[in-house]
Length: 457
Image 1: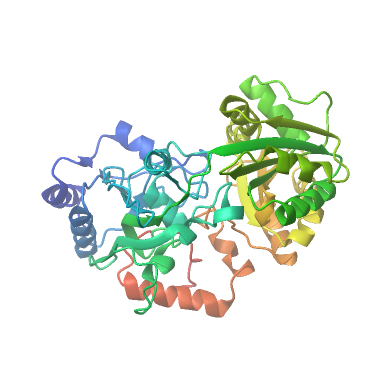
Image 2: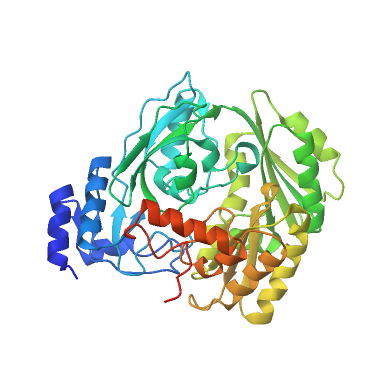
């Protein structure tokens, strides 16, 4: 086994002094955002270019050292932290952001650019970007590509893979692939960007991405609708999707979550009464969409109460009731986070059954449910569990499999779900995944302990 001194010296030959060995500094890279997953590492290496990333991968391949690529460290499934003593490959210094190509409606961004920077650059050029997340001020382009991030606007614009026109990345061999020309039509073989997107750093290290932009929608209206049941809210969501072409987001949360947010953040409920279920909707267009939203809302059955905001400040306040769920739940201790997708016709039944299923295993635990119901994505968060107690995880994910859903909608598999990948993928699919991994990363240098289940000895 190579000594730490040799490893650090070889890495410094590539990136100079951008190799962190101070344990106190390293600590900020070794715990994931939920605080459920915590590891350790001998070093954090911070390359500043694609060439330096390739050099780092080559050194580690030669020395038999494995890497965990890391962006903003906003992951929620333990996929970006060194749980098996890996070296952390931080991509935050890859900060190139090219001028927006206003004719093509595209931009090339380095892996270390955070989402809010990308959004501002697009807006300044009269465009927008189709993916939005609550972690917009810390989530990086590289991390979003690696996990195929979704967020609140998948309903209208699709996930990160749908925005990806081209990619630059370093394979596990140290080879660089670069296809950033921006051609929308290019049928010249395998679509490597689509393959690498969502691979969680197991096939390649993303260093830059060519991204599709969307038309800017300056006129926005947000409404929160209250219902008695999840089924009624989902029926309303379906009606709104059919009747509102300008619908950009459709988010579900429940009374316990709203009350937790209000308690932790210091907000007051926008409603006059306590209602069991809430649906937040946002419409965006070139002209004021408020009347269209009002007409569609008035046609809905079972709406108890509605709150509407058209100005930026009040809109942000309404969004905060939904987006603050994650921070509020984290204030209770490290949660078990299970983001899943269900067939829309079964989503209400699943949401109704999950709390009882959790309580049967862990009576003292609390279940928090919210999510992007326009695309079938519900976030199951459970607080009050030991971080290593995965009995609830297994029960919920098996329920998802029984309902015909996916055990990961947008957070990825990471470490947290790798043993249950078979619930969503067949043996033949997993074998194909392994074959691709061996081809692009033959020595297992890149994030070998995530996504794919451990093989039998």
